[in-house]
Image 1 (cartoon, rainbow, N blue to C red):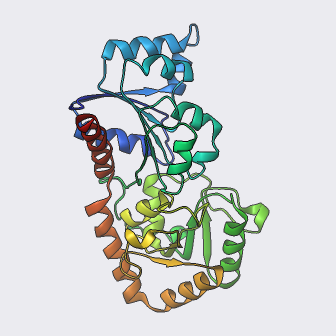
Image 2 (tube, rainbow, N blue to C red):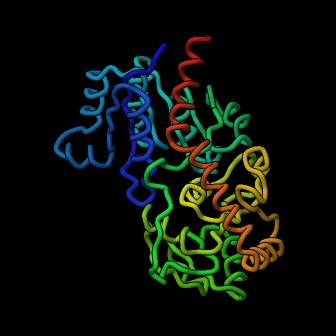
Image 3 (tube, one colour):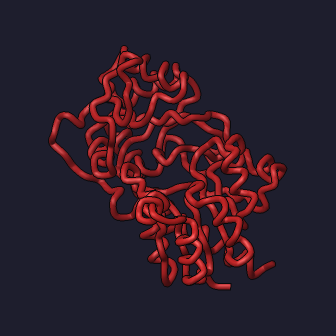
Length: 318
């Protein structure tokens, strides 16, 4: 089996650009890709049942694969097409096993690609046929080094993200007491931190990576094997020096002190910040190594090729 025509379900994701980057990589990998933006379909077909319009589109296109980002397809549509089309879903977040909607959708698809290894057995026990581990990536064109002289982007330490977890808030508060910290991408005022801009787009992300001496990673979980947010690949892809939390298996992908740096505790994180602020040469060399590694090994072109190849090989061997 060869996949030459794909229907891709997703939202626009203007802030992260994830679906746009995946779509472009898909288009370079297969012959034809049709993108269905679910919110836009709901808006355009407000006068009728938008789900019928989607079903007609799918059956008219007769794709080799229907690919779904997260859960961006009506359940009734997925239920109807599953016997006619090969289906795959990509779920980027860490809470997959606890997401009831994902489990409900995931039981209908042929493949569910997730970003950690720890939940694979649990997902199988919940009725998911083929959960597959697949890391995210960076965009080969957009995630690049973008130089800036604007001082507003400069800081000793920068974090881009939301105050979702207590451990994240406490770490950033501790860093803020000792270093020049800038937070971006959410409302941090309730925690005594100033957010300079609530929505960060790809080019702005790259400028922050260029201007900050240290880009901080602090994921939702420190325990899921192979999991890290897409902040990891994007930061490396934009040439930032990344100091991130350790998750099991991180050493199987990166070399500590060569591609990035990681910490196991708040105390170790503060020690590493202090060390790398005082040692510019190794910091810059690690950032350069990480940049080359990300663009050589984990662009979205690599991600989509991995997904397509897995499906094609599984079908052919089955």
